[in-house]
Amino acid sequence: MLIDEMEDNRPPLLVLVGPTAVGKTALSLKLAKALGAEIISGDSMQVYRGMDIGTAKLMPEEREGIPHHLIDICEPEHPFSVSEFQSLCAAKIEEIHARGRLPFIVGGTGLYVESVCYGFRFQEFGADEAFRAEMRAFAQSEGAAALHAKLYAVDPASAAKLHPNDEGRVIRALEVHRLTGKPLSELQDQSRGDEKSSPYRLCIIGLNMDREKLYERIERRIDEMMASGLAEEVRGLLERGVPRGAVSMRGLGYKEMAAYLEGETSREEAVDILKRDTRHFAKRQLSWFRHMKGLVWAEVGDPGKNSDLFTEICAIIAGKFQIDIEYNCS
Image 1 (cartoon, one colour):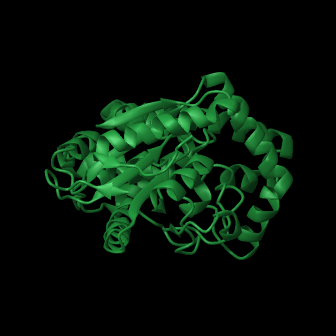
Image 2: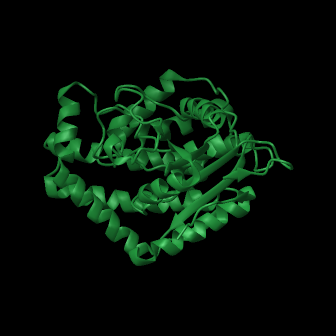
Image 3: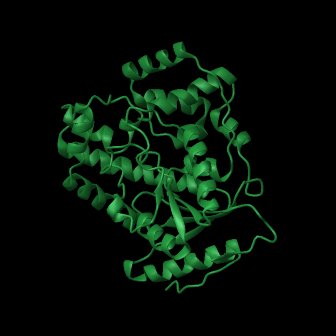
């Protein structure tokens, strides 16, 4: 691959996003091989060690020799944040580019990915511990939906992006509004750059799929996770002392299985809730990606047509980066 840098000498950054279960992983391996790329996980949950099944983490032996970064970098007790991801990811991009390779972010956590692409400036809004405690007590007495409704009343844009069960982020958004008098969504919009001000030459590709087919894939994936031992993985985390309130344990699959293991739901109910919430999560992912600047959509069709998808994406990359691709994409 020969990169033409005559007009723009910013380092190139390839990005592949899409909802959970749409097929990012398999396609990313094929693209990385063809392009001489190294993959950076853009998933907020794959950073945690010991959380493999519920995060659909690709094991080292499954990575086909492609270097993968920002996977298994912290313990589940650590409250990993988007600002940490932004800093670590920027360093990895620099390292990969210095090796003459193409940095390639693959993932479904929109805020994490977008923070790197457009250099979000995370402001320190301060903290109000008494208010946090008050909101936690309110959530415990009135329920997650009531807490989420409080956020919707002052910041509907942030509320639309956050699941009612994501108590920590809901409280933080309420706290920022209390401290600044402004919605967090407005402050985040003010902190965002754009494609021209990005530190990278971006090629952002979003995968989409027929909604019913996507939901079928989500349900099949969850059945496979359960058969692979998701409940046992969560039991092991609880037994080692990872608190249910940890950021990591609020992830899809972990909170539902923890509720089942603690006797709050049956196994069947937990799986049904997980499938439902994952479908809702996929809808929120797609909503987020639709607002990402510069994203080019590619439609995932039948498995037999994946070679067409690969060729289409290769053409998008070649056009965006103005490169000569010296291989056969088909």
